[in-house]
Amino acid sequence: MRFDAGLTGNGVASTIVPSNEDGTKMELRLDSPTSITLGITEACPMRCRHCYADCAAEPKSSELGMPAWIDLVEDLAGQGVVQLYIEGGEPLAKPGILDLIRSASARMMTMLRTHGCGLDRGMAAALRDAGLGRALVDLMGGNAATHDAQTGVAGSFAQSGAAVRHLVAHGIPTDVLVILTRHTAPELQSILDLAAALGAARVGVLRLYPLGRAKRLWSELALPLADQMAALAALRVPQGLTLMQSWHPKDRNCCWQGAAINASGRAIGCMYLREYVDFGDATKTPYNDIWRTDPLYRDLRGGRVDAACMASGGGGDGSKGGCRSTAYAWTGSWTAPDPFDVELNKGTDLARLPPRLLGA
Ligand code: SF4
Ligand code: SF4
Image 1 (cartoon, rainbow, N blue to C red):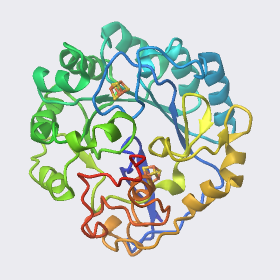
Image 2 (cartoon, rainbow, N blue to C red):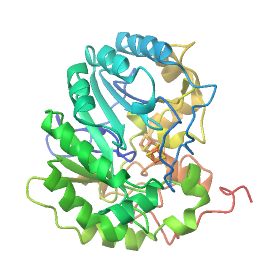
Image 3 (tube, helix red, strand yellow):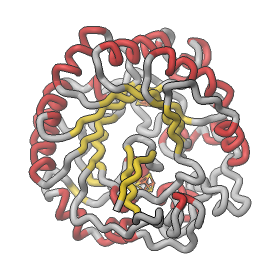
Image 4 (cartoon, protein in one colour):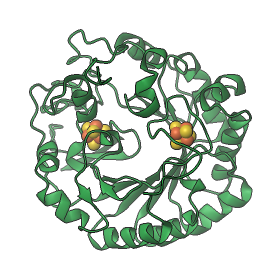
């Protein structure tokens, strides 16, 4: 057996794809999750046009406090989780975040996704000392005018770039993430060049999901699939930088390993399923029990799909239908093909959302 690392559809964590020696993909079933994403807050000082969490400046009253998160992470470590991915909202805006990272990193590989604003030398040093294993910083443009127009906050581009520099200088492996939209497509090359100049290890180009504000502004933000693929194909990857993306042929269904908890402590499998599922209260029921017993969760991890692209993944079992979130968004079916896969798209216009999704 061998393992290939790649970018999941969610783009936030490397997926491990087991394969046989001849390159064909293995069937793998997990009795419990090994990696989990925590969306620890839906508060954020930015006002990004696409924000999936529909963030506000203040946290919702239902959000778990930091002591509850620390207890939950302790439980998860005891249940066998070895990798933690912390996102938001803006996790650095959550009081006590360093305590959480310190506690988690003693037991797990701990990663943090941030917009980086306010992440100065002192915070970079504190994150290093707390044991942070990897940072991922979002950029939405290659210069101040384009980035700040997307975040809605003047000066955010300069701060995000400085954050990458500080993180790298403090020895924390750091990636840059960018969500591909109509606004960022012309910016991708300059973002790659900037990321390389700042010392980032990798750039992850992520697809746009119809969630939160992105759903409401879809016609402004979304590109047809052909334009998305053209934007990716035009990229020249600077020396020393690794480019990650989750389109064809890497657009695999990674629900089989997906685990996530939202800001209120609800088990949701993946942050990209946040508007579609609720598997239960992870503060009251061990996540492993939810994993093993929730019928829809079990079904999604089973990989049952109506059609799979045989090229995706480079092996014989193909894409497993691609991402379940976008498949469900466009069709209302959990087993439908993912329209972001070029072989499964079949003429679906990704620049338009189905009226059902818009509540029409
Ligand atoms: S930085 Fe992230 S969490 Fe904050 S508003 Fe933008 S997309 Fe939302
Ligand atoms: S919904 Fe499933 S397939 Fe899509 S990114 Fe999340 S875990 Fe992966």
